Length: 97
Image (cartoon, rainbow, N blue to C red):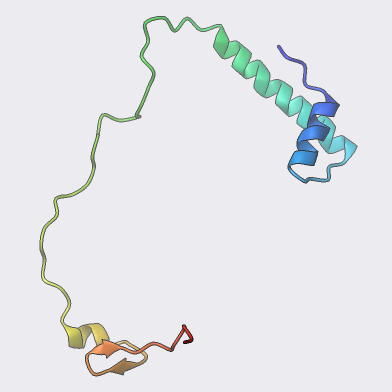
């Protein structure tokens, strides 16, 4: 197992632009050591002949069929519009010439 040092945490702190206390650094060192220990434990597994998992399920495409359906008529679509002009939604200008 690789030993995680305070200096490495300080380097990570600098890269992430964090400002940690000594207690927080010590906690992070302990947490990182636990995480590395978990990966070391995984290294002990015999995975010969086991294919990597690419997807959790066998579903390759969960999309529905594309079907034409009737759309909302113009009057009903404009019923709740705060502002409308003829058969269109009216919105404030947002670009200047």
